[in-house]
Image (tube, rainbow, N blue to C red; front, side, top):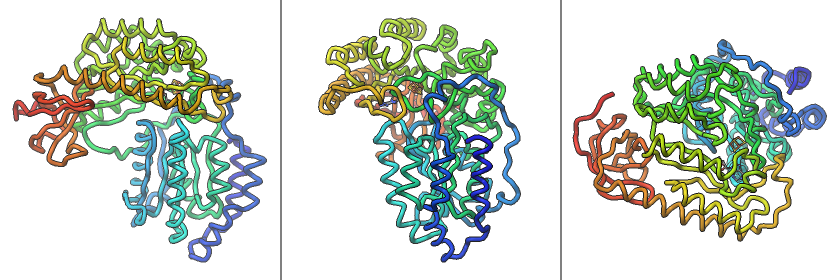
Length: 523
Ligand code: 5AD
Ligand code: SF4
């Protein structure tokens, strides 16, 4: 939305009376959300993010703001009220939820998991595949009765789906009881948007086609005290032909090293034991800063911080450079696990996916990593059934999985995403064939996962204990440096600590073990 559009939008908002708090008014408010006024605005003035514009975007200066604050008027608005955020999708979304939770809590809201108790419910959505979107539309349908019961309830949709024109249109037309839609770049405007949703009559839509600036001092209500997420960059410039992310998350913008280092130091001082650096393509970190400083340099500085574990996600093979491998190989608090999405094992498919590497280049990178870090766990993401993928091309994916020896993989059936180049390709592969391919692939991945676990039987590993196991409250669980899930019986005092566990039994996706010493290593 440009300035002119924003102005027009706020004019529409200001035409509404400020006080609409009575039930009768609120019912009126729900009806008025479909108002022709607003639809007209949407059809004539609103500009969705567009492929053409997104690809033309330039490296103009991204502004960094250190002055986020919540206006006095909104600071106490949440007193006696509760918020609920339901999160879909990746760790980036989970972390955005922590930021929104932090903002709500600064406004005085308390969190709840009960939709019936909530005064405001946000769905933080994911657009990566169609089934992710379907889940959200299903949930929107479930929330409607709550809204009819309690017209004061505010329901909002945010995250990646809000950045898609088709989604915004569908909500406007079919789900007019939604109060608020906002995108991924304007989370910091949450207090203002809540205010508009509370006191305005029409649906508040705040989605930008421009990528956002970097807002530094946002509050965060972190989930847990053991593992923390730290954004190092936002957006993606890779434009893989199947992927919606560059449109929903905008262009690559890196945070300054000193801001990241300070945040990690702060987490270490608070007793966090593991930090995950987040970005859609973390290996591109620093390129936009033009400082000759990349992820390897950042990791080298973070190595010196007194925190037991540092990891990052997600990597792109094209940008994974020697400097990073050299730093990771130094060990210490750098984890022995690299998630390196390959997507396909066939060079022609990789080419039309726009991945900018071929099979041979990927394998060269794998060999380099293995040479420098012989013990490292390699995991990956794979898409099967890309448009017109032949049996032979799919077989190349299977052979690559075996050649690399991935110990785990997230595997997906290709899902066309409106607005992406791949969605315009014709496709001669039936869904039945795609499902069969997925099953064949998963069988191999599962076998490799099980084999990699077997090797640990009888070994002693170091586990960062996260808490009770999800399946059995009597059992504690945590991960090793190589990202293996370990379950064991032990004292609750070991939660949040690094402990030594002797592995007694290997399963496909986890290891069972016993504590070998009750003395806890405190780092
Ligand atoms: N269809 C299926 N899978 C996709 N991914 C991204 N876009 C799509 C799509 N359109 C997968 C990729 C990526 C992971 C996060 O999701 O494997 O690495
Ligand atoms: Fe999507 Fe990852 Fe490709 Fe970026 S690098 S376009 S996030 S798959």
